[in-house]
Length: 126
Length: 126
Image 1: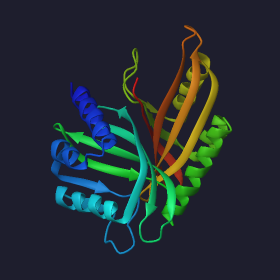
Image 2: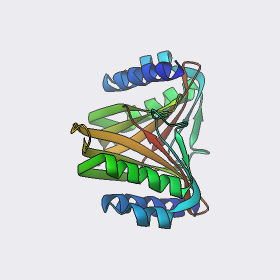
Image 3: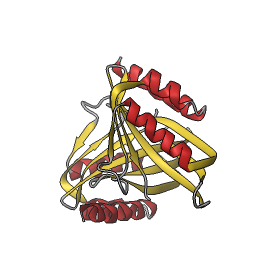
Image 4: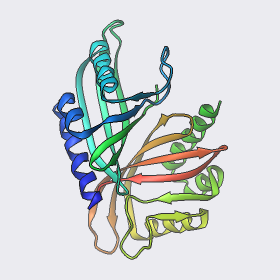
């Protein structure tokens, strides 16, 4: 039962990512106090953790302002246990300021509680 | 510092997987009481969790007996925080009993404590 809920949320998240519809994805699937964790603390940041939907929205806005995405893919979901799932993300993007273009692969691991995503963790190798 | 240890173990694990050297991988990188968690409880099993290196070895043996692997890839590692990393696995394998051949992608998420892997969790969509 719980697994079915997780699977349904996981499939919706992959679809929203493929459609590049971040706003609907966050509004429909995330808990207001969801926590987003980067692979490490970024230069100038206090922590790798971002708490709450508003702060997560701001992170997406930062990404959109900093990078021009030429192509992207979201593969999955990959399920684990009752309450977690993973997604493989691939981006071909240019850093707007430097013009550096690179191909990036990262993993997103999501936790679902009571039908909402409460935590996302990103795995990559910068 | 801890992150460097995790990174080094992660890179070794990917190399051992690429070389298909499970025995050295388990002996050199895993804690004797490591826990391995499948995506779900398999039919006939009591739990999704396998505890201890001997039981993990038996799981690898089961896989080797049940499947003929035509080709495989291990991509990564993808790092997260001080103590975790992920790997993308891809297999082209045939179930020996049925002859069914399929292409499978799965994610492995690993936890490192005191320089040894203490937990591996597999994410896939059966």
